[in-house]
Figure 1: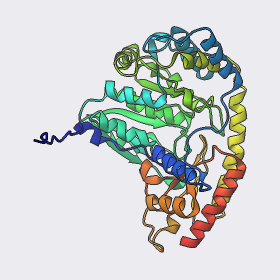
Figure 2: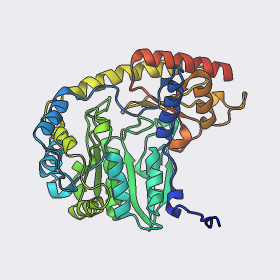
Figure 3: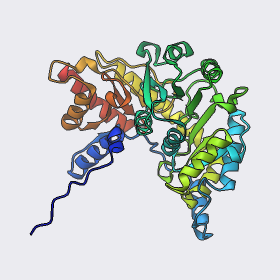
Length: 398
């Protein structure tokens, strides 16, 4: 007799999260390329620059020196000291290694923080537009996302007064990403500190995602963690991925109160264990070695930013707020909605890829339905080719 059929169900919690939209765009673009299609890819959120040679050489030395074994789950003492030193040098903070934990990229840091701090029903404040992962990791932890809309006409800037009405007895964390992915919006030091004072008075964690903190087009980079008293309630999620073009090396870090670092370390000891030993040696060199590559990348991103904004503003009906940091443009393309069956940014992105072979991330991934995210972490020539196609596509569908 045939064996009885058994339905093997997935755990309920996996239904709380979705597939990363940025990863899906990358996969769709890659599939077309493998089919021989000439795709211009504006979806990738990673620098197109190579990892600096001194960092690569440090990794090679680590391999030849047989630094290939397990390390402590939360990172080596050497790397934690380098992270604390770099953050102090750049921003005037005073963290100690016990207040630092190294994870497998900045995304892993944020996932870990939600797991160790958010209880079911806790509320997490997330400004819109937001990075795709925030919503899903809060949901996975059983928390409730509370979204705060920002004004496109004001450059998607955020203020303490915009957040305050959304605070409640259940608010656990406020997440701020400045410069922002996807909008490139930037908070001033004064406004960021106003938000800090507002949250700290209420005993609410303030999570500052500093992934793009060194890529600021105007003014000096800063960290709200340098404010007086910030170490008690501010959590820093940092990453080497964008700053040093080390996306594939997977090194991120958390700076915060020692009990939070210890909790993440405990969680990590049962999940990923340690970040790659070789990558940790490379990260030490990135942090303590020459910093010349950072301003060089920033200067090139500025040129690309200016080129992209000018080209987008030349497309009738397209609205674009000038990015103040990071390497993304977030234009409103709703001018192309309606006439040819396109009703949303999701449909716009799908049609743009299928018809014009340009990959972008639709705004629904970031909490809006009228925008697309364009990464300008690619050459001027690729930007020109893609924006020509985008212009033609919008003209045909407006």
